Length: 479
Image (cartoon, rainbow, N blue to C red; front, top):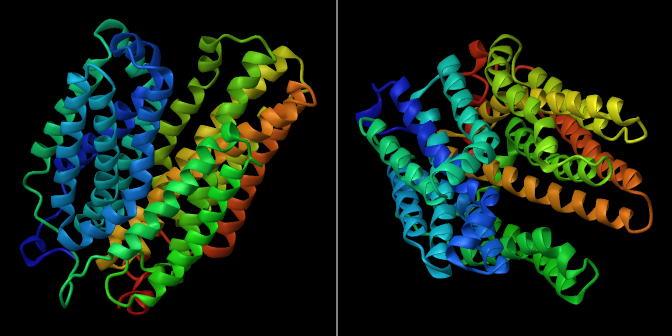
């Protein structure tokens, strides 16, 4: 809940623009590191292994600390944590600009990950605090455009800046946008949860959570390289499972300020949005399978492969506002279902590897468009359902869990899809391997669809009902 000072404040377009600028410091600029590996390696003289570790550290630290940061935003202030994240982004980007070797590079990437962990849940919580009904849904649409649009443009923007200005200019621009974000939201009052009693940070839960998340991330991202049946991978998998069980047990025992309040999942719409978000982000595995197959199996260049997915970016950006308008007319459930169905069909088209070259090229191009159309339609209704389904005192924490589901789903889907593709390609043709990898992603989309149908009620997300939908569940969610 917002403080007394902020009860009369209403969110503005200036605030939305500041939030979008904050979001793209990660999605547009920090993520660009993935696409400029040769330039960075040549300039800094670091080996490829070190560079790959530096690249992955940002997503790893973001995924590990996003729930922690969301909970802290509720307690110490959502604007305060947004500012903290932007300051970390500035320092992290500055270290990359000043880097002459691996040390500043690695530290800068860690700070960028912590920055993203702070900014994402805190800004979503600020939107919930200062926007209502259709205005909140509009603001969340622009938040989604900042993240989806930023991630879609990062390859083009990062490559262009690195080619014509030098790769360090990417992070100079990131600093500029972070400063602009701080200036644009300077008039926004602080917002924090109403609490009683002294706040006691859950250090025990944090230690268990970090160990578990670290094990999960290593298994997901490095399992194929270590070997899925190797002692190291199996040991880490055991740590992941046991750590998850211990964490749930530990958090449920803790009555005061747990790191994650599992009572949040008593809210079925929130649970449906979070689970479907995890599974639909796992469909990102399609990108690595399809792009690899058209280059290896169909002789496409990397440039031609990239051109095939242009429709994906255009469709995502075009459909985000459409999804918002549909939600206001028919509720969140139907656009989430329609978006997931479109994604499922689009991904399925890419699995038709038996088609001749021209027909398959058309199928992949149309498939990417449907993929983007579906994700764009799904984005705002799903985010709004998660935000609306959370009590005011837990919005930051709930947003952190929701966004962590995105990151883990993406990493999980890519790892599983790549493993299935490479395994099948080892004993069969690349066509069969690509089809197997694509079918895996169709299954992810199907499971996402089922979770929406089972858990998200028809009434959720309609503007006229948005103020009443969550009232019956608030007492049971708050301690």
